[in-house]
Length: 142
Image 1 (tube, rainbow, N blue to C red):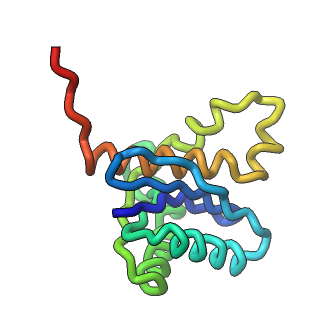
Image 2: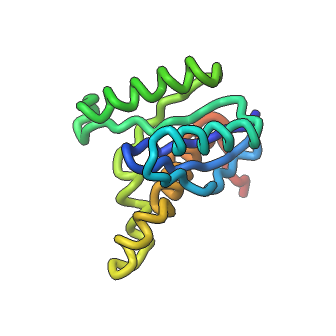
């Protein structure tokens, strides 16, 4: 099994990779200004990694309800399923971008955000959350 984690955004697509070993690692984000080229770059990455499943961050509100942004992600998920024919798993992404951004100094955040590094870190957190649920690690025995 090979998983691609996706942090969807209207300007950037953060990407991550993981497998049954249960470790998510960031991939280069798709940051092209042209939406079609961002999509093509993501599809190329999915095919190059021979992904079997896609894990997509789902933006729930703090109270757990789905808002306007969730509808955009629903449409993106439908497009992924239709065009790639792979299962798409939705994972609550609440605060992942904030958590990913918190590891970067405030001085560099604007520059780093434009590069897509934060988005791919968020995709890594989303995918890691999914992998942790799918492949739970045994508790160490004392």
